[in-house]
Image (cartoon, rainbow, N blue to C red; front, top):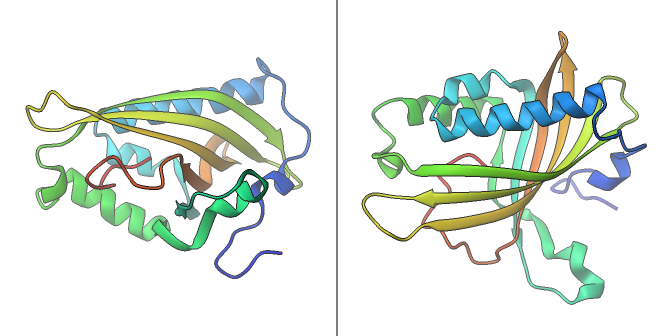
Length: 186
């Protein structure tokens, strides 16, 4: 049973898995590669164009739980991020301008997307997509870099023949973040 703070179970939305190499799968994979390239190259306004107007973007907290309670380790009542199109657009505009002190100079990032699976959903033109993301992040002249591993549970929606991101839940592997802030998009 979900509460008002908790989205519909992602895996309940997944129907038949779409075959690797099919047109829809390749389009989803291309979406993820282009998204990583845009964000790594600070093209935030281009990235916003890949979002639907009703997007839901969530980064829930994690707790360490016993194996039998693993899914309960994802806490939606408290989140690192709980955003919509308007707040994502505001962040993109701020990061593109001169007022993003947490990202000036900008982090150097590389996003590695893997383990992409795409599923049919009950809604025509919408696909559930699961992917793993590893972000490397370096700041200033430091020889240290952060690693941010996560799983992304997305809903991709076909609009005018192009896939757009309609929902994203980012499930961080870390309970305690190993990065000073989440001023970057995941």
